[in-house]
Image 1 (tube, rainbow, N blue to C red):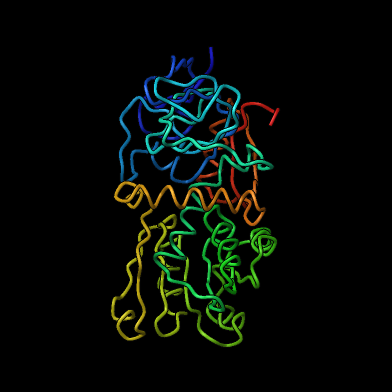
Image 2 (tube, rainbow, N blue to C red; image 1 turned 45 degrees about the vertical axis):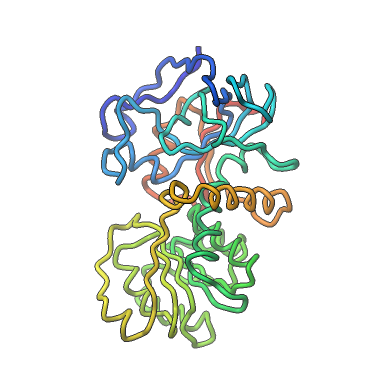
Length: 329
């Protein structure tokens, strides 16, 4: 029998157990798949602490994105067959397991030439980047974007999508390793997060000019500093708050005539599922063309899930963290 990480009480990863788990046959409209690779994100870890904005019902199997092979399909499911390479996403967890059942609507074929490892962690980050930049940020070719947390999953995605859209990218990251990862992903310049002259570094990286767009998955005290780097009619895209929820003086938005724009992809997917379908299709198209590809920083076997989750919580990795169930990709 396969295994699954099981959360029976909210807490730290060391308190969770790897238990026997058989999801059973797929129900109507479902696809059963073996999970070869699962992405591990900060949100996955936050959900298991009971501090996320959406509280999962216990017991709970963490994980929100992954890729693998179809094992069986339920009644009414067409377009998938056993052995197909697929990727899947889940808003209710279930990915830190050897196998599980998923609604067919959340399953997509992996494009030709795209590895399961890449497919496992491409949808959430790149959907977010596309939606943030095009729909919410209304970016234009030639504009400059400052990316905070630039070596994280959404940061790398924002860099690659931004370059595809014709933007100049300034990446902000806390370590030399992370700055090099951001530059390797396509950033035009990199600045040191936390430096005393950070704002001067940002301005110098943009030839002395303020920036047009801020992509902010970080929050905390950095958000206000970043907001102050914006030019007239600039857009500050609020993606998340890994460093805490910031307290931003709203007079800055008035005085600088800038917009603070929320980017809540999960809610958008529920309200406008057709938009979610379009984003997913575009991401897979760009992946097949080789335009975008996530950076994989660390790989862990399923039995070492606690180390993988702790690494995601600490945020020190330059790229994505994955759990690999099978070396044969």
